[in-house]
Length: 193
Image (tube, rainbow, N blue to C red; front, side):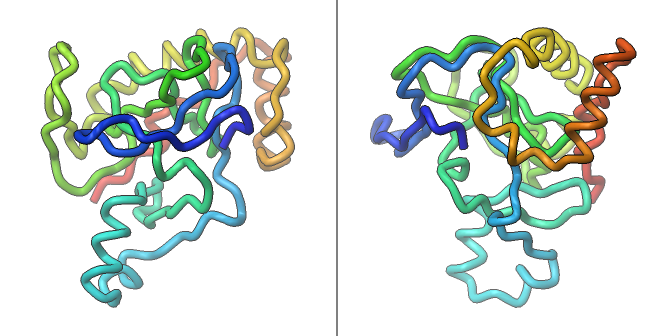
């Protein structure tokens, strides 16, 4: 998780969340999946005690292979928003899609996390009120456009998490930028299951 963040109590309804302690500019990597994150197969989860399954359901997301990823760091406390300020990329990291100010929560749209069951989200005054397992199929083009716009600033910014991005992804991104090619779609994260 970006070093300029901390966990804070948000309110009784939401609980805890991840909040910026300093300004995080649009285009900054905010989280990277790294080797300390725990990955569980559906079979492993099925064999867990009920209490552990509850924790997996609450604190994980599913990757494109359908495995459950439990973040070891603050990332497991990032809350949902239909107007999120962070989006995941096809390169195993998230990026700020707009400027994030001190005291502001870092948020994700859980629609791209391969949830297994739909859920009603907090009313934010947007058209969407429910997160569905197939939201990636419906909204990937909108999310791709936001990611592309944020990446315009990517190499101009201090990126304290860049060293955690796998070398193969760093090289691929450099090549795409040098050739002016579009980024891979967030749709690559979709797990049909």
